[in-house]
Image (cartoon, rainbow, N blue to C red; front, side):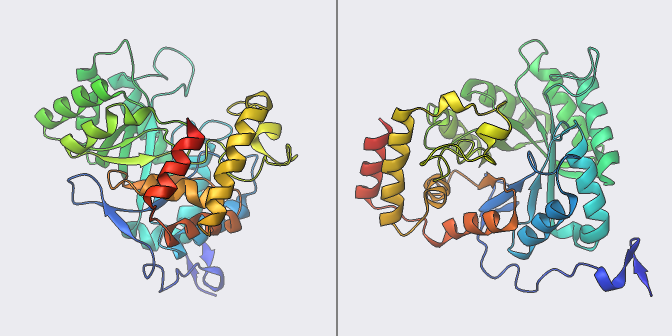
Length: 339
């Protein structure tokens, strides 16, 4: 039996020919790059403690539905680096023939290894981290490389200079930033523009309950021609029907507790979620679908980054794209709840 990339040809993944039929793609700022309206994040469910075959099936399901963008970071796991390692294995088994159809991103900026060179935004850290990420994933380059968070100590000229250097080395096609404030973003974009490597994209936390980006950042991105990809669109699962009747044993608030704690989900919050759920039902959507659609109503949002623990969950999120229109009454109702 012939083999392809170390896998029996009988089991070789063949992407569906219909994968591009329904997905919409938006231009990322003023660049030439188009991104799917929904992208898949590998923050959770792709570590060494997770089910490998489930992770593999998630990626196949995503690509079969036109999701071309897979988003990683150096410290996604657990343990740190595990998501990139698992992705590298899956890429070799299933996606290597499709490399030129994929947008693969990674990031560095949070703690990754011990000592003074494994964190924040020094040239030493960013370049070393990307070298390690490429090795784990078995790639020659990533499509997008982000600085994962602002560094209050390192001069921004050094951090942006490292991103520029990485592109000139051919290790990334584009660069971006994450969680930078409006003022920080404007400064970073201007430095990168002067260096000749434009800032392609900003990845902020953004959802109906976390709207800091509306205080200037989205305007900066529009004016500077920078795209935006929103992460945590469901506020760690709060903007779903998951917690309306209590705390499921398999929920993130119960299982993890690092990023979402049960005490954060009080009666006042649940009351708001119930009202939002009612609005979503009237629109013919689940609350999760409405939360994703609410972000995509703004054309400055290039893509929404979703996570999923199983393929069915991802397919449910994709249904958000069936209804992205909001009436003035819908928006007024939502704002009244969120006040």
